[in-house]
Image (cartoon, rainbow, N blue to C red; front, side, top):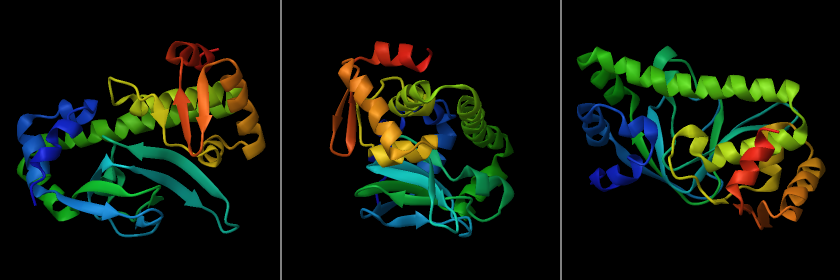
Length: 228
């Protein structure tokens, strides 16, 4: 299956676009396409490592569910988000669930093929480490915000992060396919609190709320609200 046609889309992402050309080509040559339907799981916590993934179309919810059924949503993965690198480093089972929000197309580089690429060119491990360190940096920021920032700032900041592809894209998105309950779960807020804060942003003309989506009308004012 020809995956070369996806290169321009992947190249919109900062991490992939800055990889050495040989590594970009190796990833595409070794990759295969995966199609998911809405609500279908790509993998669940505890599943064995299965490689590295990139979102090409649609979105995935990265989350965890405790024994009481409460879900914590960590992130919403959209084009050109790459993920799955933790199990590449430690060889241990998946740490979270990955579920398609709607119809979703993914690029998968299987674990054996990826390990072969890295064995042949060990210096590429640094590129994989950069992918993981970028997410670790964002995790520390989110932990800090959870402890120190008011809920209104956390809502604005998370919307900004998603719009900017968690720092991986140059051109921010204006329409986020993001149900309010998912945003609430990301921020450990109640659905009611999240809805009230979003309606306040809507009242200020910063966002527009739709069914299962949030449109950013004024990115500059959202940025100001995120750094208040």
